Length: 245
Image (cartoon, rainbow, N blue to C red):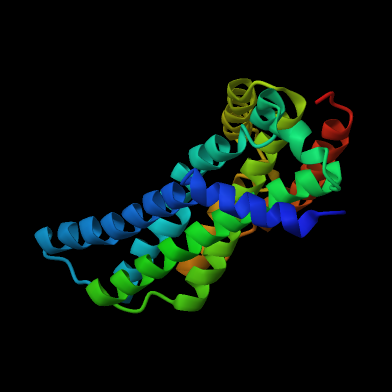
Protein backbone atom coordinates (compact mmCIF):
# COMPACT_ATOMS: atom_id res chain seq x y z
CA UNK A 1 0.00 0.00 0.00
CA UNK A 2 2.20 2.78 -1.30
CA UNK A 3 1.69 6.04 0.53
CA UNK A 4 -0.58 4.64 3.25
CA UNK A 5 0.84 6.50 6.22
CA UNK A 6 1.09 9.75 4.29
CA UNK A 7 -2.62 9.42 3.48
CA UNK A 8 -3.44 8.48 7.08
CA UNK A 9 -1.77 11.67 8.30
CA UNK A 10 -3.66 13.60 5.64
CA UNK A 11 -6.91 11.99 6.76
CA UNK A 12 -6.26 12.85 10.42
CA UNK A 13 -5.54 16.46 9.47
CA UNK A 14 -8.71 16.52 7.37
CA UNK A 15 -10.75 15.21 10.32
CA UNK A 16 -9.33 18.02 12.44
CA UNK A 17 -9.84 20.68 9.77
CA UNK A 18 -13.48 19.75 9.20
CA UNK A 19 -14.05 19.29 12.96
CA UNK A 20 -15.55 15.82 12.40
CA UNK A 21 -13.61 14.26 15.27
CA UNK A 22 -14.25 17.26 17.50
CA UNK A 23 -17.99 17.10 16.78
CA UNK A 24 -18.19 13.38 17.56
CA UNK A 25 -16.12 13.74 20.72
CA UNK A 26 -18.19 16.75 21.84
CA UNK A 27 -21.52 14.95 21.36
CA UNK A 28 -20.34 11.80 23.15
CA UNK A 29 -18.81 13.82 25.99
CA UNK A 30 -21.98 15.85 26.38
CA UNK A 31 -24.09 12.73 26.89
CA UNK A 32 -21.34 11.36 29.15
CA UNK A 33 -21.85 14.39 31.38
CA UNK A 34 -25.62 14.69 31.15
CA UNK A 35 -26.36 10.97 31.54
CA UNK A 36 -24.92 10.37 35.05
CA UNK A 37 -25.90 13.87 36.21
CA UNK A 38 -29.58 13.49 35.28
CA UNK A 39 -29.61 9.95 36.68
CA UNK A 40 -28.16 11.22 39.97
CA UNK A 41 -30.78 14.00 40.18
CA UNK A 42 -33.58 11.47 39.60
CA UNK A 43 -32.12 9.20 42.29
CA UNK A 44 -31.96 12.13 44.70
CA UNK A 45 -35.54 13.23 44.01
CA UNK A 46 -36.79 9.69 44.54
CA UNK A 47 -34.70 9.45 47.72
CA UNK A 48 -33.08 6.23 46.52
CA UNK A 49 -29.61 4.99 47.52
CA UNK A 50 -26.71 5.76 45.23
CA UNK A 51 -24.12 3.00 45.35
CA UNK A 52 -22.37 0.53 43.09
CA UNK A 53 -25.61 -0.72 41.51
CA UNK A 54 -26.64 2.78 40.48
CA UNK A 55 -23.13 3.57 39.24
CA UNK A 56 -23.18 0.47 37.07
CA UNK A 57 -26.58 1.37 35.65
CA UNK A 58 -25.38 4.89 34.83
CA UNK A 59 -22.42 3.44 32.92
CA UNK A 60 -24.73 1.03 31.09
CA UNK A 61 -26.90 3.95 29.96
CA UNK A 62 -23.81 5.67 28.54
CA UNK A 63 -21.82 2.79 27.03
CA UNK A 64 -24.72 0.70 25.82
CA UNK A 65 -27.45 3.30 25.34
CA UNK A 66 -26.67 6.90 24.48
CA UNK A 67 -23.29 6.48 22.74
CA UNK A 68 -24.38 3.70 20.33
CA UNK A 69 -27.72 5.41 19.62
CA UNK A 70 -26.14 8.73 18.67
CA UNK A 71 -23.04 7.04 17.29
CA UNK A 72 -24.98 5.31 14.51
CA UNK A 73 -26.02 8.67 13.06
CA UNK A 74 -22.59 10.24 13.55
CA UNK A 75 -20.70 7.29 12.03
CA UNK A 76 -22.87 7.46 8.92
CA UNK A 77 -22.66 11.25 8.63
CA UNK A 78 -18.86 11.46 8.86
CA UNK A 79 -18.32 8.50 6.52
CA UNK A 80 -20.95 8.83 3.80
CA UNK A 81 -18.83 11.34 1.88
CA UNK A 82 -15.45 9.73 2.58
CA UNK A 83 -15.06 8.44 -0.98
CA UNK A 84 -18.14 9.83 -2.73
CA UNK A 85 -17.41 13.52 -2.13
CA UNK A 86 -13.74 13.16 -3.02
CA UNK A 87 -14.66 11.54 -6.32
CA UNK A 88 -17.29 14.17 -7.06
CA UNK A 89 -14.96 17.09 -6.23
CA UNK A 90 -11.98 15.65 -8.09
CA UNK A 91 -9.85 15.47 -4.94
CA UNK A 92 -9.49 11.71 -5.30
CA UNK A 93 -8.12 12.04 -8.85
CA UNK A 94 -5.66 14.69 -7.71
CA UNK A 95 -4.46 12.59 -4.77
CA UNK A 96 -4.15 9.40 -6.80
CA UNK A 97 -2.11 11.18 -9.46
CA UNK A 98 0.69 11.06 -6.88
CA UNK A 99 2.62 7.87 -5.99
CA UNK A 100 -0.15 6.37 -3.85
CA UNK A 101 -2.41 3.40 -4.51
CA UNK A 102 -6.18 3.14 -4.36
CA UNK A 103 -5.84 0.47 -1.69
CA UNK A 104 -3.89 2.93 0.48
CA UNK A 105 -6.48 5.63 -0.24
CA UNK A 106 -9.38 3.47 0.96
CA UNK A 107 -7.39 2.05 3.90
CA UNK A 108 -6.54 5.58 5.07
CA UNK A 109 -10.24 6.47 5.08
CA UNK A 110 -11.02 3.37 7.13
CA UNK A 111 -8.18 3.97 9.61
CA UNK A 112 -9.17 7.61 9.97
CA UNK A 113 -12.74 6.55 10.71
CA UNK A 114 -11.56 4.02 13.30
CA UNK A 115 -9.31 6.57 14.99
CA UNK A 116 -12.16 9.08 15.22
CA UNK A 117 -14.67 6.60 16.64
CA UNK A 118 -12.36 4.94 19.18
CA UNK A 119 -10.82 8.27 20.17
CA UNK A 120 -14.19 9.95 20.72
CA UNK A 121 -15.57 6.96 22.65
CA UNK A 122 -12.43 6.83 24.81
CA UNK A 123 -12.71 10.52 25.73
CA UNK A 124 -16.40 10.27 26.53
CA UNK A 125 -15.88 7.02 28.44
CA UNK A 126 -13.20 8.57 30.62
CA UNK A 127 -15.42 11.54 31.44
CA UNK A 128 -18.42 9.27 32.14
CA UNK A 129 -16.47 6.95 34.44
CA UNK A 130 -14.87 9.76 36.48
CA UNK A 131 -18.18 11.59 36.84
CA UNK A 132 -19.98 8.39 37.84
CA UNK A 133 -17.24 7.63 40.35
CA UNK A 134 -17.75 11.09 41.86
CA UNK A 135 -21.58 11.02 41.89
CA UNK A 136 -22.15 7.36 42.81
CA UNK A 137 -19.38 4.83 43.27
CA UNK A 138 -17.04 2.59 41.29
CA UNK A 139 -19.21 0.91 38.67
CA UNK A 140 -16.42 -1.33 37.43
CA UNK A 141 -13.74 0.24 35.25
CA UNK A 142 -12.62 -2.98 33.55
CA UNK A 143 -16.10 -4.07 32.49
CA UNK A 144 -16.94 -0.54 31.35
CA UNK A 145 -13.78 -0.36 29.22
CA UNK A 146 -14.53 -3.70 27.56
CA UNK A 147 -18.11 -2.62 26.92
CA UNK A 148 -16.91 0.59 25.28
CA UNK A 149 -14.55 -1.34 22.99
CA UNK A 150 -17.47 -3.49 21.86
CA UNK A 151 -19.65 -0.42 21.31
CA UNK A 152 -16.92 1.39 19.36
CA UNK A 153 -16.35 -1.69 17.20
CA UNK A 154 -20.04 -1.81 16.38
CA UNK A 155 -19.95 1.87 15.37
CA UNK A 156 -16.96 1.06 13.16
CA UNK A 157 -19.13 -1.60 11.53
CA UNK A 158 -21.81 1.03 10.88
CA UNK A 159 -19.17 3.32 9.39
CA UNK A 160 -17.92 0.46 7.20
CA UNK A 161 -21.39 0.12 5.69
CA UNK A 162 -21.43 3.85 4.87
CA UNK A 163 -17.89 3.59 3.45
CA UNK A 164 -18.97 0.73 1.17
CA UNK A 165 -21.87 2.72 -0.29
CA UNK A 166 -19.66 5.80 -0.51
CA UNK A 167 -17.37 3.77 -2.77
CA UNK A 168 -20.37 2.61 -4.80
CA UNK A 169 -21.95 6.02 -5.48
CA UNK A 170 -20.66 9.54 -6.07
CA UNK A 171 -23.57 11.11 -4.16
CA UNK A 172 -22.89 11.12 -0.45
CA UNK A 173 -26.53 11.63 0.58
CA UNK A 174 -27.48 8.51 -1.35
CA UNK A 175 -24.69 6.54 0.32
CA UNK A 176 -25.71 7.76 3.77
CA UNK A 177 -29.41 7.18 3.12
CA UNK A 178 -28.86 3.57 2.07
CA UNK A 179 -26.64 2.93 5.10
CA UNK A 180 -29.28 4.37 7.43
CA UNK A 181 -32.08 2.32 5.84
CA UNK A 182 -30.00 -0.83 6.22
CA UNK A 183 -29.55 -0.11 9.92
CA UNK A 184 -33.31 0.33 10.32
CA UNK A 185 -33.96 -2.92 8.42
CA UNK A 186 -31.45 -4.71 10.63
CA UNK A 187 -33.31 -3.54 13.71
CA UNK A 188 -36.58 -4.85 12.27
CA UNK A 189 -35.08 -8.21 11.33
CA UNK A 190 -33.95 -8.82 14.89
CA UNK A 191 -37.62 -9.57 15.55
CA UNK A 192 -37.24 -12.88 13.72
CA UNK A 193 -37.39 -15.56 16.45
CA UNK A 194 -34.10 -17.22 17.49
CA UNK A 195 -31.94 -14.93 15.31
CA UNK A 196 -31.47 -11.92 17.60
CA UNK A 197 -27.99 -12.83 18.79
CA UNK A 198 -26.63 -13.24 15.28
CA UNK A 199 -27.35 -9.69 14.11
CA UNK A 200 -24.48 -7.19 14.55
CA UNK A 201 -26.76 -4.79 16.44
CA UNK A 202 -26.89 -7.36 19.26
CA UNK A 203 -23.33 -6.23 20.04
CA UNK A 204 -24.91 -3.34 21.94
CA UNK A 205 -26.84 -5.77 24.16
CA UNK A 206 -23.63 -7.72 24.77
CA UNK A 207 -21.85 -4.51 25.74
CA UNK A 208 -24.60 -3.61 28.22
CA UNK A 209 -24.50 -7.08 29.78
CA UNK A 210 -20.73 -6.95 30.21
CA UNK A 211 -20.89 -3.55 31.92
CA UNK A 212 -23.58 -4.92 34.25
CA UNK A 213 -21.53 -8.04 34.93
CA UNK A 214 -24.25 -10.33 33.58
CA UNK A 215 -24.02 -13.37 31.31
CA UNK A 216 -25.21 -12.86 27.75
CA UNK A 217 -25.10 -14.98 24.59
CA UNK A 218 -25.05 -12.07 22.12
CA UNK A 219 -21.34 -12.42 21.30
CA UNK A 220 -22.01 -14.07 17.87
CA UNK A 221 -23.43 -10.77 16.61
CA UNK A 222 -20.20 -9.02 17.63
CA UNK A 223 -18.08 -11.67 15.89
CA UNK A 224 -20.17 -11.30 12.72
CA UNK A 225 -19.81 -7.51 12.91
CA UNK A 226 -16.01 -7.86 13.09
CA UNK A 227 -16.03 -10.18 10.08
CA UNK A 228 -18.24 -7.81 8.12
CA UNK A 229 -15.92 -4.90 8.87
CA UNK A 230 -13.14 -6.75 7.05
CA UNK A 231 -15.43 -7.82 4.19
CA UNK A 232 -16.94 -4.36 3.70
CA UNK A 233 -13.53 -2.67 3.78
CA UNK A 234 -12.15 -5.04 1.14
CA UNK A 235 -15.32 -4.66 -0.93
CA UNK A 236 -14.98 -0.87 -0.75
CA UNK A 237 -11.49 -1.14 -2.19
CA UNK A 238 -12.57 -3.56 -4.94
CA UNK A 239 -15.39 -1.24 -6.01
CA UNK A 240 -13.34 1.95 -5.73
CA UNK A 241 -10.49 0.61 -7.83
CA UNK A 242 -12.92 0.10 -10.74
CA UNK A 243 -14.47 3.54 -10.57
CA UNK A 244 -13.63 6.31 -13.00
CA UNK A 245 -12.22 9.35 -11.21
